[in-house]
Amino acid sequence: MKRRAFTLIELLVVIAIIAILIALLVPAVQKVREAAARSQCQNNLKQIALAAHNYHNNFKRFPPALNLPGETGFGWDPEPDPLKYYGLHVALFPYYEQGTLRDKLVIDKADPQNFNCKGPDSIGATVIGLLTCPSETQFPSGKVGVYNSLYFGLTSYGGCSGNSPTTTDGKASLKNGIFYMNSRITFAMITDGSSNTLLFGERSRMNLKVTSSSQALGGWAWANSYAQEDNTMNASQLPEGTQPHNLDVFGSQHSGGSISNFAFADGAVRSISKNISIVIFQYLAVRNDGKVVDGGGNY
Image 1 (cartoon, rainbow, N blue to C red):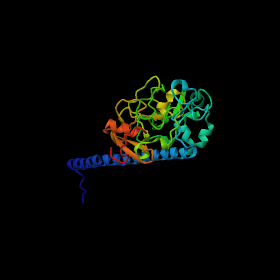
Image 2: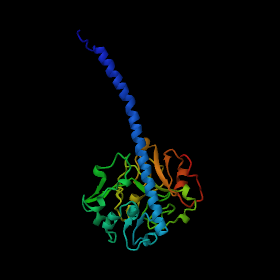
Image 3: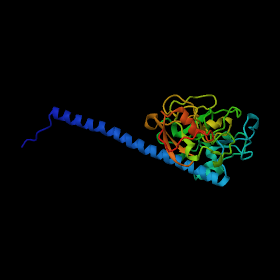
Image 4: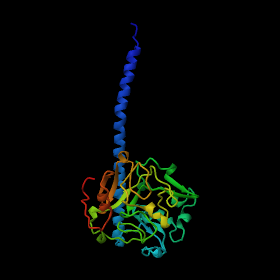
């Protein structure tokens, strides 16, 4: 018996059905991937928040955004750790299981970011997986940023410095977040309540503005007066993940840039919409303004 072949019409129908199935499947796969990435990001923030809590248990305070000597003349307090140069994440390295890496760093030189970051194989170019968001699509090759001849492992997460824009002038800073230059904040100083105050959040690298001070990097190894915006973000603007923005503001690419993940000072991790009221967002960012917002709410 002669075998009957497919007609052209039958073949086109089969192809059309396959195309429809693929069209239905791709969004579903993308949603699953985004859900997994969002879950991983939230877990990263949870681990970072727990590290900060462990640091507080040992030192009876949170680490500063930047431990930088010689800044009292610029309106900042003396450094908590005398004559040392390091940022927020470096302080937390022992609690990230990165104590060995911290031990390799030179943090007692006046220009440690140069000393630690000279070349692609330098210590400062090390990428810490815990500090990178899986939804970030704009990392350069290897997640390493380059500024002149210096190389920096990049990060997606930073501490909350309050609601004022990042500045090198301590007199202009409101110092009302949990992390800022040479800060010594304790739980007792979070008078709005730890469950109502932002501790850490994420930043998006999409459409970062390049400035003379930031160079749109966000590396963990900077340790000069401009490194505050590498280690912290603030609520001077709403969290934004896709529109042009500065290095020192919160945001992410989750759900098309519509939400960002945050760790509160009590260790809880929640998502905040970019459509949140700027007033409410700033209340959450400030630790001591008396404007208590329920941190368990939906934003």
